[in-house]
Length: 268
Image 1 (cartoon, rainbow, N blue to C red):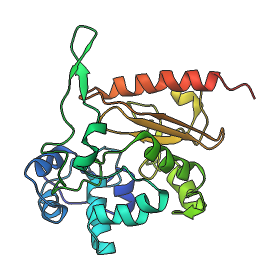
Image 2: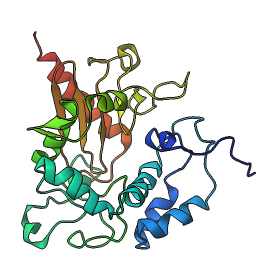
Image 3: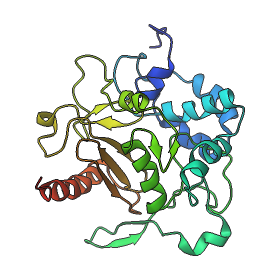
């Protein structure tokens, strides 16, 4: 049964995945080769899964923010990323596709073969990864390298700046890594953390039942990539892999093992 909105959807709802949008239509839009401009009206014709602001639901919110960036900046999303983020940070190998000249550097996706080994996995792109896609997803689809992603992570660790280039104010990063979940909402099921603006955050050690630091923040990618940034320890934990498809529990299990080993090595 459809009901009316209790409140308008805000940018804050989109940044915190409390907008009520699910992820069902995004993959269809990408498969149909829609642009973000074509996609958004169709997404907004679909009913929300939840009332805005009611609770956290990982979905199309970040893809919608990608279209918002295009409208506000007057630039395609890929051009905005390149001009405002990648070029200033020296991220020379990050884009929505891989130039043919770099094809030999692209790793192949793998998956579990059911017998304890690995087998070829699903590709990340529905079309050719060596061509610019029509659907420039705000929530996924970038191809990158460990060194590029580390530079981006160090920028966030340093409060929005790296090597003399500032992209964000320190207070902006502080707001990003604060917990913004609705009052009383329990931690996220899959990683037992709160959620800030685009990143999950460790809000209480007792919730995770693991070593870590309050205020530690990060998120993961579709190929089992993960990053967690710990300002208290001045540490970035970065895991780059090419496992797809994989269950969300498996992703965080691997990352938790890596993090525990890293934290247990800290002696002062």
